[in-house]
Image (tube, rainbow, N blue to C red; front, side, top):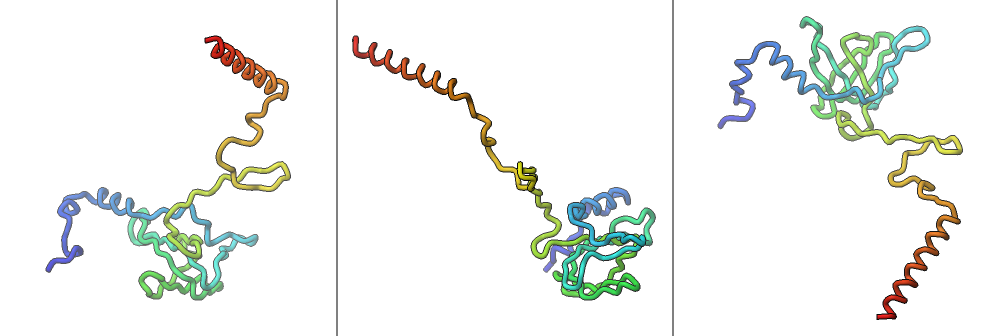
Amino acid sequence: MIDDEDVVDIDVLTLSREERFNRKLARRPPIDHLPDGVVVNSLGELEPKFKPHDRIVVERMSVLLPGNPWSTTRVYIVKAIDEATGMVDLEDEERMHHSIANYRNEFTRIKLAPKSGDPFKFVKQKVLVEKKDGTLAPRKRGRPKGSKNRDKSLINQEKNERLAMRREKKMRKGKK
């Protein structure tokens, strides 16, 4: 019996190195919409924004290959943080294995993940609009209130015209 993993795509064998690299980059999950997990403090040092038991996304770049291409992107749960060295003990929630990362490493990018759900799925943020009282609220759908407001005199004039047209129709109908 042959597994799907044993089947080799023949096209991959004929691709150039650049084409294979571009194909791998196409599988790179988007994480730019997530908030940064590391900030620079007032002394210019890197500081983690996450705490133990938080979910984070770690994107690693290859140190050995020229140009430092993307290597992996995984979702982890933080077990412990050593702020002296920058080492973070992690547990992969999907594969249930232990890992470590260093938030001070220039080839590692750490982002904060939501408490649950798929962090790679981009959720469109609601547009916030400032109200008259200065607070922010999500923009409502549909026609804005007051956009169809007209003068009372104009409304009364149109109403009188409609009534007059109805009276004329009734009179014409009555003559037949």
